[in-house]
Length: 134
Image (cartoon, rainbow, N blue to C red; front, side):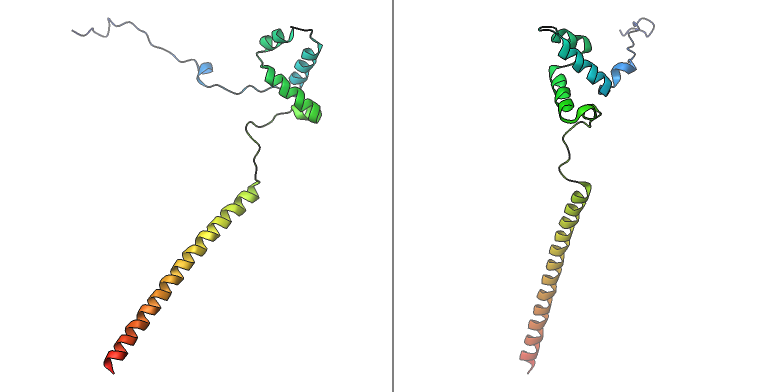
């Protein structure tokens, strides 16, 4: 026999909004500079403790050092995730229009071929009608 609703335990799970959506961590250029300076000043074996304390990975620190060496403080600014687009919006639009142009040319060729076939068929019918009637 099923239990009544009053006998069932209340095990309702309430979601925590902080755990529902993960967000990408964002670091300011000042923070990155401070961590680079701390990492450069640390002695042998201390770098791991800094990375664990700040919850960073060694490849992040390497990338920040490389960006700082290549472009200075501006290199440490916000960068968009993912690969850099290989084509500009104008190039993508030109490519799209070129494909559409090719498609329309092919459609026009097919229509012209159909017209030529119709003309040939009409010519053959006229020839048969005039040849048999004479």
